Image (cartoon, rainbow, N blue to C red; front, top):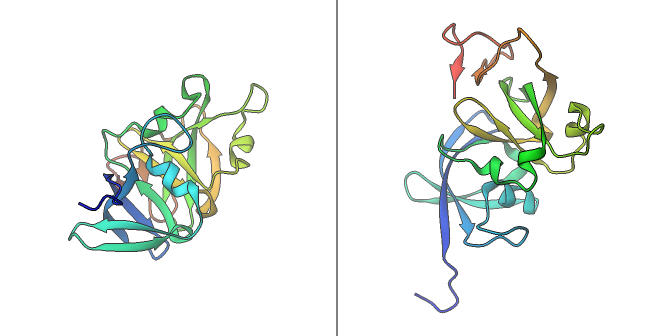
Length: 180
């Protein structure tokens, strides 16, 4: 191995592109982050720069993807990346329904890292980070805020879980709704 080579770890993920295509593979992450203690996370990589990033496809080839064309990233079920964010323990949680530019509707929980009184869903919507975590019952998603068409806070008897409906309608689990 070259003395100039920097070893990176791989993080499995599934990308949803603006074309509607779903791509499976892995990100290349630094062993240590420049912005926090510990290794780099997928969310760090996505929010670090504009433009392209390398992504290893399932067949072993590497492709470059433009961040602006990524609608969402689905992390493996066991990944707790969102919970590693500084202040996660004290952040206000909001259960939301999120309509994406692809017509997909996601139902999940977002953490609002703002002081009391400034922790509404509208405050979350104004955060500068382009890519944001959404925790569902089964997975953590990282959603590109440029592809969020609508955000609604869910209260009371509205559907919950990680039900998705590609027509933009929230359905009930098991009734024609795709689960991610």
